Amino acid sequence: MSLNFDLIMPFIFILVKIAIVIGVTMLHVMYCTYFERKVIGHMQVRLGPMRVGPHGLLQPLADGLKLFFKEDIIPTESDKAVFKLAPIIFTFAAMSSLAVIPFYNGFVVANINIGLLYILAMSSLGAYGVVMAGWSSNSKFSFLGGLRSSAQVISYEVAMGMSLIGVMLLAGSLNLSEIVKAQQQHWYGMYLIPQCVGYFVFLTAAFAETNRTPFDLPEAESELVAGYFVEYSGFRFALYFVSEYIGMIVMSSMAVVCFWGGWTLPPFITNAIPALLLIPGLIIFLAKVYFHIFLFYWVRATVPRYRYDQLMALGWKVLLPLALINIVVTSIVKFLVA
Amino acid sequence: MNPIVPGSYIPTQYLPVLIFMIIAFAFGLVTLMIGTFFRLKRSYREKLTPYESGNPPIGEPRQQFNVRFYIIAMLFVIFDVEAVFMYPWALVYDKIGVYALTEMLLFIGVLVVGYVYAWKKEAFEWD
Figure (cartoon, each protein chain N blue to C red):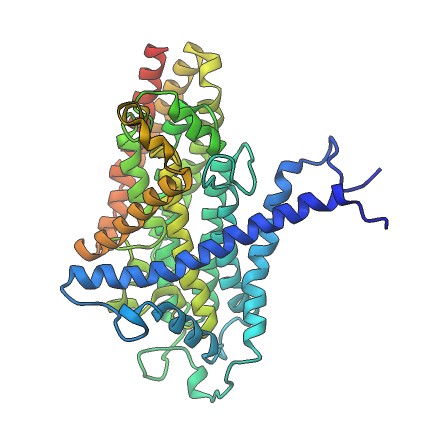
């Protein structure tokens, strides 16, 4: 046997980790769609899905199977190669971000020192999926949807990138695990408190980046039907759908890691009630992520859609100056304190 | 001896990222390929025309569009590059101290001048 186990074991270890992360995320995506319908249903005094299984619990499975067996329609006038590639790139961009997210102490697929930069890079790659879909479909609705979406995504990416500089200043690292550990050094235990402006800018930009209400103009169903993926059907549509939810989970995880202290609780709480230290880190992390995902649904059920000029004005005239002021104030305060 | 063994020239910590990327790319590709064995194929000409609310499509879909989109793209390039300049600065801020602070205040000052200019030129307006 020339097979070297020392060589192969790390690979198997990595593959198992990746399988766990992707499997758990896909399960979360399935039930995110279910809970979105349930939460919004109850907020609108309806019941939401009730027919498939007890309380509609099997609804996401039924939806998935239905989409899997649906006919795959590729319009004759579309640019076929690009049309086929676009959803794969979109899924790729959304899913790859999961590689650097620390779910609890020590559990991360790739503990690289540029984790934050990597996630920002991957979320920008998602724009390619949108532009390619909008352009290649050769349909008016998807063309306009793709244009709107790309302009929106790049506008809010500036604000998002700048809102995280405050966190980088305080933590002095781009490694997501290091950022969590740096937050534990302070009594408040989460950057939400010194970086509340940054958090506000980040969260607003995250809503826009994931095309969620109130910034879901790319898929404004009353005017653009479904925006850039009108022409997609069956499983190609499902890939867009799944990736948007993965994007939502990634953005929530980023908010939790950068502003909410990740898998840890603030020291001033754990000092008061030491029993809380017994809670596994994963549960704390997931609870924080679920809160953010709930926030996405809550906002969707509450806030009406923005107009396009309002959307652009908010991104460039409110969030960008706020993020810049946040950087200046954070750096001055840090200099004076240190 | 082994070409894959962690050497000084292979950034091994990035290996999981590469594997993850390959799997993420394969995920969409493979599920779509498996699907081809189960999907129906009953298409006809009308079904394959672009969707325009049930009417036959009129005219060329790729039309002229608002020049504002180009301006937004240019602004994005400018401001995103500024943001990228700030990342390394934020990481070494502790080590450089007052020099880093004044330098970045000057940099942001220049940025704000450009920002005010763009605002006055109505680059952020949509009418």
